Length: 513
Image 1 (tube, rainbow, N blue to C red):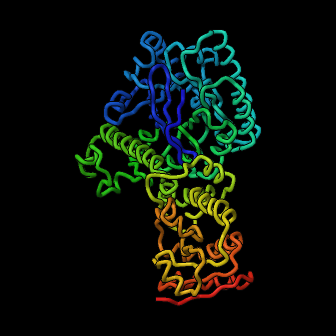
Image 2 (image 1 turned 90 degrees about the vertical axis):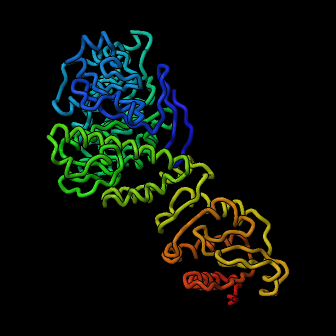
Image 3 (image 1 turned 60 degrees about the vertical axis):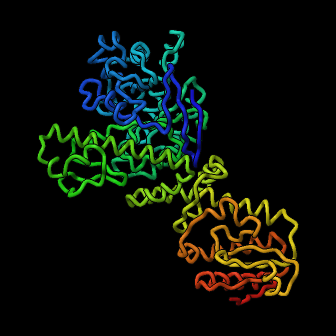
């Protein structure tokens, strides 16, 4: 049903198979109103490569029931890709109730041939703890009813997603997820994120995703309802979300808002389109503003869809290249609240360890580091740890070590004359990894890491401490430090020498040009 093809952090490219159809994750499912179909699912497939969409089973049940039973949901949407149906939970959140039972919705979703179905749940939204507990209780009751009716029916036609509720109350989310994990579901779906995104409460949303992903594990896909703006897509993918839906492309368009990868722009404030999609390439902002409201909304919505799918492709490429964290660092600057949420990720030790466990040992592209926060990346943490455990702590080392600036090349014979010794090891300083042994200098990731001088300057205290730990682990008796012409490396060498003196390891600085 689900096969993982590539991983980076907790993000993964996977293949979801259902009823002879397949779709690749991370998977964006545009929300389709089954009645209006402002932009058709068929058009999305032909022009954007959409492999899946989501629509509302309750609306179909109320307004298109007979036609749906005759043509099926694929016939109504004229779409031969994967169709997921929400059960009406959104209507419960908006209006307080729906005119259908969990049994009716479950059987209807099966009868109309949906590919991925959701039991009738009770979204938590933003509310008090007591009401949140009630939403979880009712959701679990509805799920029990749904599973019983499906069991009585016998054969399932659809994959079934377990809706996880609890809102911002992490203990409720955890309890709901733990109970549903023991049930017979094909995938999981986290609900109630929309109010958080509307309030820019990204940190709380990330906490919710992390809690749920840890509980349900990584064997089955995780869907996020109402994912909203594409600027959060890379983050939710990095936290383990495989699939997500959104109606924001059309809702923003109705509000005259134009989506970019870093935010939204008001149409009346755009002088130049920062996009080359077919909409933006064939008209000016002025021409768009002069159109009638209905046509203008449709065209903005079309552009917004292009922006969403473009972000998905960029995320997939980043996963393949092993650069998903780099993409997060870039996108985090889109909004102060998003940057704060990104800082939460980078300061969560348990999460970083989990990401490290799911990040491949190497990648086909180099690593670009930007600042001290970059040093907390899983790949950097792992490389530092492996250097310590597999080299400095384990190898039988010589008594003497010569440290050379990472940006210099000095032959072994010349070094012998400089330090006046015949037997010694060589390592390089001035790298984000602390000391890099000579024999590992041209291996991944040490020779494939790019970083600004400012990173070494800003992290000099951390790097000096790391180098001291490495030297202690190696048991060296004397350290020769070759000075550098570069001011920032010279200052780093002086900090290292001071720390060596304090630890009692013999050392000397050699000025050599």
